[in-house]
Amino acid sequence: MVNTKPKNTSQMRPSQFYCCFECCIKCLGGVPYASLVATILCFSGVALFCGCGHVALTGTVTILETHFSKVTSDHAMLTDVIQLMQYVIYGIASFFFLYGIILLAEGFYTTSAVKELHSEFKTTICGRCISGMFVFLTYILGVAWLGVFGFSAVPVFLFYNMWSTCAAMKSPMVNFTNTDSICVDVRQYGIIPWNATPGKACGSTLGDICNTSEFYLSYHLYIVACAGAGATVIALIHFLMILSANWAYLKDASHMHAYQDIKMKEERELQDITSRSKECLNSYT
Image (cartoon, rainbow, N blue to C red):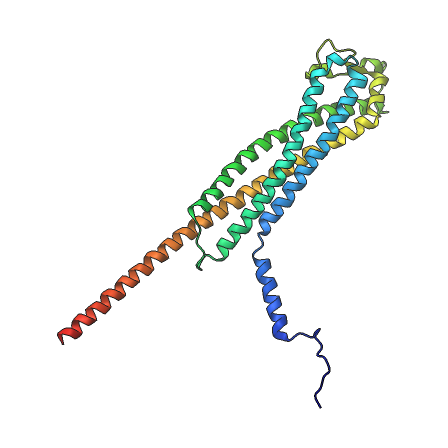
């Protein structure tokens, strides 16, 4: 009788397991882990800077309108500048999301090129030019983000001055005879014009401002945004090192392939000369 019992397809031979394992190792070996880490760090830093910075700017406008400049015309220009900065934040987030994906794809390309350095894989001049362009562009963006990091530290400094002044007023170790003489004047920082009213907060009014949710939230969001800008700078430096190394590898790969082509041509010419000399010798004999 013929055995019609179906075979158990869930059981795999050891050779099949080995093939799957080898395939997984090969796929994992082609992942540019350095570019992947830099991309995650870049996305995280940009997201923190853009998200926290956008909300913190909105809270700053609320604090100024409520406590320092109650006439709309006095802070109209500042409001327009903050709205423009918020639109710039949207553009920064979109650009770096796309740029990070492009750099990650470039990392996959260069990793494949380096892995197949001694095979038939050949890098083109266009590919090397694109890698060099990314190196230059990442360098420019890194310098620009250093400026952004420094600029994002300015509101942290301003809010820290207000917070430290409020903390000093509440300290039991300090005895002030007249707390109303302690003031924070934001007009001296150039945020609002000198004719803005009231322009400054003193004594208990200043303490009430520091206890508001807008001040507390904006202060900490500015700190997180500054940290996000710093993380983005680190990510761009990381990208710059990766791109420079990959560009050097691609350049060496092109030189290696050019050397191999010249060597193969010389070997062929030598073989032709040898074969011709043997034919001439055989004809004489």
